[in-house]
Length: 291
Image (cartoon, rainbow, N blue to C red):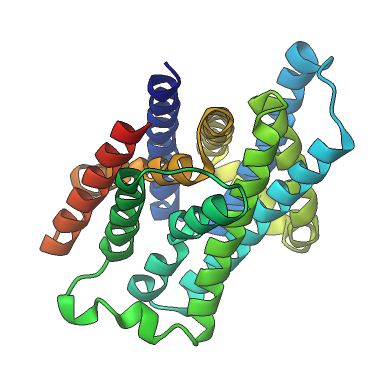
């Protein structure tokens, strides 16, 4: 029962996040500023979630321990967005993207060493196949397969690795909180801390923020709802499964996003991308069989 529920939660989360990706990419193509667009979606997420929280969850007890974990998660969201943005602006996408997606590899070690998670060989193999798949999915030529690692000492690659490390630690804090609080409530408080961390940047660019808000009100509103719903489902799945397996299974969203990229945005789909998608799919199947 728990295996089917974990898969259902993560499948729903991935589908929702695919719609998030579709709206976000369409807005970027229409001229939206990626950072400001993301900040505004965070603010709207908090505003809308506040209404939901006080209507349905105001009696939920929040301990100081949960607030600390929510702060770590929210600060992690903000830092990951910052480091990812720096990596993509300063570096070649094909070099830095594979490094930003190494979180399942890091959570595998965190789960085994610190959380003492017990995983089957099949599950570990599935996680490693997913890592290989997401590492290679944007590499266009076999000659460049080790290029991201060869540039690992350069600042864009360091920013990319920092984004992956930060995602690992906020995944861990979410896992620790997931067993003792409603998923939506935890995500709500995490987003509050995320917006607080962004506040200095928001104040510095308030004029740009207002212009973006006037231009893209509906996409921002849709994205904030999709984002909260997606991560709430991930939090619920973490309460039922291991950190290592849930974070790896969460990568199924890459397959859906690739589908959107190919058939809606007409992106190229080379041999490497096909092979990478197969690796990810096989890895997902192996983990699912191990649950």
